[in-house]
Image (cartoon, rainbow, N blue to C red; front, side, top):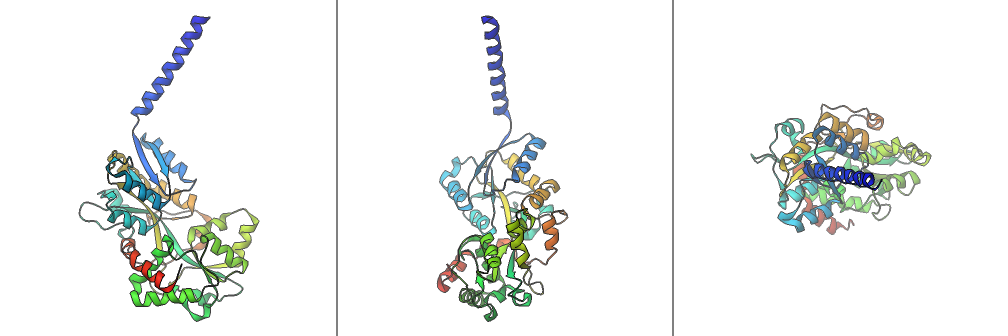
Length: 347
């Protein structure tokens, strides 16, 4: 009996050792991700199933990830970096944290306006999903015609109606950078000052808080990323449904330059140890399968224009005209936008 038990223990130990050796030999990809969406888990699992490449993931916010990459330097294990704002991608590129990727797949599937400029060696980062910066308004208190452009946010008719999150939040900085690209510095600063003058209360909270504040009557006009709206639209909670019933949604500037669109995107880290796997992962994110995950799972529009979604909230929001401003151009305005925000008191 003792011999039999010993043999069983030895067999179990041998199997465990074999599993450890197999795991050690399996190709790996080290991912630093600012995407905190549970639905992305299936995305990563499917990539591993299709390629055999195991993903080791470290989560953090954009700033934390960029700080970590800088402090780790050449010793960083990161292979791929996923961030959720164009301005942060631009900053990381300019800080030398990415390496260019020349890929026929990515060049063909990701529009030029949704990736960094190609210097001849490829682009430093690529956008894989988009979200629009929309205007939310109280249907009982505000006429839609009074909020159909971004300029209207600063119009006298909306005095005391506006609420937003912090002006310095990346989602707003990217919108303001787009407006700076469109209007120039003088008009943009005047517009920002007009927004401050129209505030119903000091900026606070996130985008969902702004939508709820409109529904609650705390303010009458707000700005939000579209996927926050879509989440509430798809919610089964009665309180969320009640919020959506009270608000209207506008894609601004449809008769002009179009609605501002931001991206979530990815890049190969400067010191990637598994570059081939990293490029393969970025190309996977541009696949039809992955693009549908972005749409169905987190209510983002696919960056690949040929991919169609069946997400009921996105279908209900409908098609809209996007701005033509390249997201790579928006990032370069961060510092100037922040100085404007400081001057006009937009906290």
